Length: 290
Image 1 (cartoon, rainbow, N blue to C red):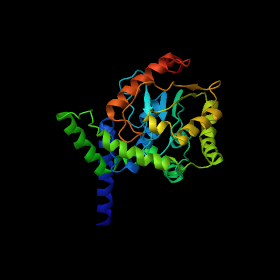
Image 2 (image 1 turned 60 degrees about the vertical axis):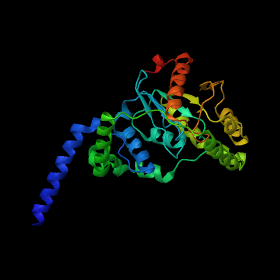
Image 3 (image 1 turned 180 degrees about the horizontal axis):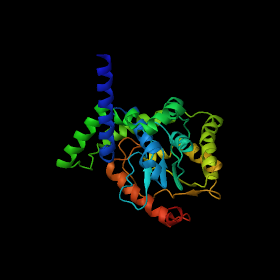
Image 4 (image 1 turned 30 degrees about the horizontal axis):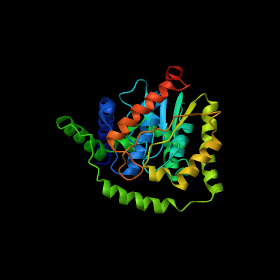
């Protein structure tokens, strides 16, 4: 009886592994929570299409919606919801593959990386198992896979509307609440210490030949003009001076947000186009890094 149960289990695991192998390219966004979404995105970067990318984007949920599918080259958006640029930088530093070009969101550079998130993805023994046994990755949890396949099937029949209705009065209330939080400014030395963590990762990646470009995601002018936002820009600029690093020029146009810091889908698409235009005009030509 035990032998039969073991053999049955092994057979089911083999069949599921074959299913994953056959349909891997059609399985996307299987996370059921924000945390799971981040882990799945990180797994895809470490073990799948992220290792083919010559341009990688790191950042927070502010950059998470940037849409690079229509742009030339091989991009991977490693921006993580609720986390920061430092988290993506840490993962890249641990990966076998080094991108030729790294786009770094500056808005979240005053945050430390999530050590628990990092540890869960970089334990040596687990990394080996996940690399060679895809079914052990969170991405391929059966419930998430079934949910994703049905969702994508439904989307094909009824395409998702990319526009979002924005209640500007409600957004203004959210912004006012955010401004109160942003008035609590930590000491400058604490902020600098957090930026230095990212700086150490960036130095390692540059030594491996990765070129770096910084960009600032558009936010509501009231948020961008706070003392906290200004201090982050100042410290980032001092740590990574424009004389030695490339920056994407901040757009002069107004961008609508949903809460002061996050762009709706349409605005994300518009900023992605702007970003691509700026990169094509940059001293670091995309053709040089592909």
